[in-house]
Amino acid sequence: MQIGIVGTGLIGASIGLCLKAQGYEVVGCDTNKDHLATAIRRTAIDRGADLAEIAKLDVVFLCISPSILIPVAEELYTNRGELTIFTDCGSTKTEVAAWAADKPMFVPGHPMAGHEKSGPSYATNWLFRGAKWILTPSKKTDKHAISVVQDLVKKMEATPVSIDPATHDRQVGVLSHLPHVVAALLIEARNSLPLEKVSGGSWKDLTRVAGVDPNLWTDILMSNRQELDGILGEYEANIHKIRDMLSANDREALQGFLQHIVVSKERQNES
Image (cartoon, rainbow, N blue to C red; front, side, top):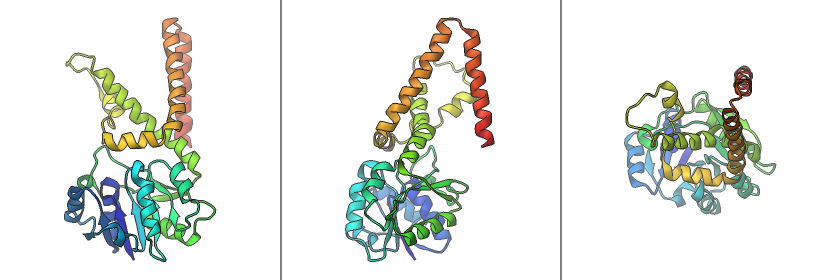
């Protein structure tokens, strides 16, 4: 089986390392020539190729920014091989799934894995180990195509999980996109402080993802802008609640809120 990878950044190169370790031939395509050269040097891919060749391979992973994902997928799918299976690694799924609804050989996906460093230099063959790999196929998606993608996901030591696109976008909005926004706002708040540092481990933990590949994350946040707008509204409302408690010197209300968070966290840890 020949595997095609469009986009040889962190995710694409990590997929290549995983599948090459399983004995597959992996062919890559990237407009970033430095990324492509690094992926070849690190043996994440065997060689480079253009989209026309990639479109004819057995399975093709699209690991590119959300803003260009559908146009590139359209070009590939239009020129696909008779049995070629496509899947993507886009961070939001509603738009892609809608586009792919009448394309049975395209299985929308999203590996729930990453790193605060970007690019193929940081790719590993264990990036997806123990991670969930979300798939959002439609009723028209070819069952064999789904099975092939699921099998490859398992060979990368991830767990394939099928959910609907809207649920996916809501969940990643809260669990991934909101933390990136909050981390950025924390860094912005830090800019008003003197240079002397009194921060502890919590600051490092909370700001770890701040500033990760601004171009990519602009794409990601914009692609989920409707969901994220509602999530930020809920977050803002909670901020106002805490401000009101502090302004009113309402110790009991603040303690009750924090106790509610403790209980919620314990329930989440149990689930």
